[in-house]
Amino acid sequence: MQLETYISDLLYRYECVTIPEFGAFLTQRVSATIHESTNAFYPPNKTVSFNEQIQKNDGLLAHYIADVEKIPFEIANKKIAKRVKILKAYLTQGETLTFKNIGDIVFNSEGKILFEPSYHLNYLTDAFGLSQFVSPAVTREVYKEEAENIEKVIPITITPEKRKTRPYLKYAAIAVMALTLGGFAGSNYYINQIEQHNQLAQEEATQQLDAKIQQATFNLNPFPAITLNVTKQTGNYHIIAGAFRIEENCDKKIKQLKADGFSARKIGVNKYGLHQVVYASYEDRLEALKALRTIKRTHNQDAWLDVRKLD
Image (cartoon, rainbow, N blue to C red; front, top):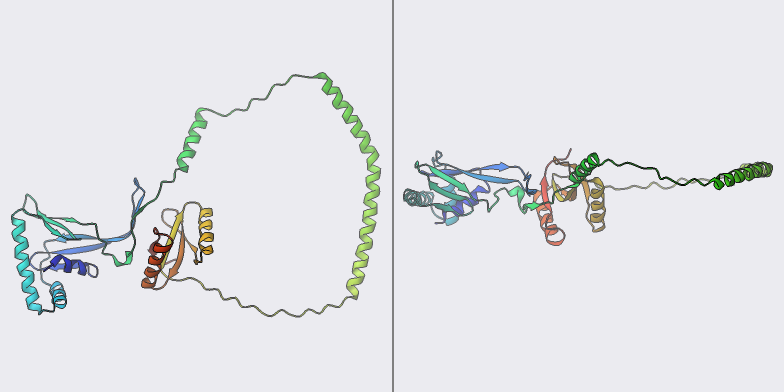
């Protein structure tokens, strides 16, 4: 009997799976995390622990074994008890018990059970298909600080350029100014004449336009009403395409995804200050997981599912 296989199956659905007269495996939900030094993002998961104080038979494990192996409930209990005796014998001999995809159990020097969980399997069904990934660190703030430090040490100064004085240029400038003033005086009369002519022409054109407007008859028929059907995306299951520190990059990503046929949009800023872009949002979890698998296979293997209610 592969006891660890049955326990592993039950851990997906229950928070406590008890092995009578031996102990219980417990699960606890952990939110998604980010490692500050490695910039690694870890999806939400269930952590597994072991408590040797919980040994009362609740019938969960025995009922499951009876259903799978098609045997009576009493026989399933006897098979569990027989396996527990073997496990305790191994522990007293100093051997390590390995429960596949769950963890290792061993006695310490004080005769107490020590449990080391295995991290090969995520028992949180809501995080199905999600995997960890590493994002490169954003260093532009560091470059800005370095530039400011350099500027404090080496101040930037502007030194005026020294030029040699050339006396003859001064007299040439005076001559140009004199010719310019003379030209202004001669051209002012010509400019005034042009302005008067333009004003008279504009008044005449305005009078002709008013006369034509008074004679015209307008028949304005109302345009037919246009109904636009806009579908608003709803749902708590969002397929994340990326998260961006600069909102302009976020808009570029949305434009690119829409060109590829996706209903991309922004869903706001996460707790890390990043603007999130989604491929789409779904009401049904299974539908969202199906779409996620398709996107990871055909478009972006780093896409992941965010489960939360938007404001």
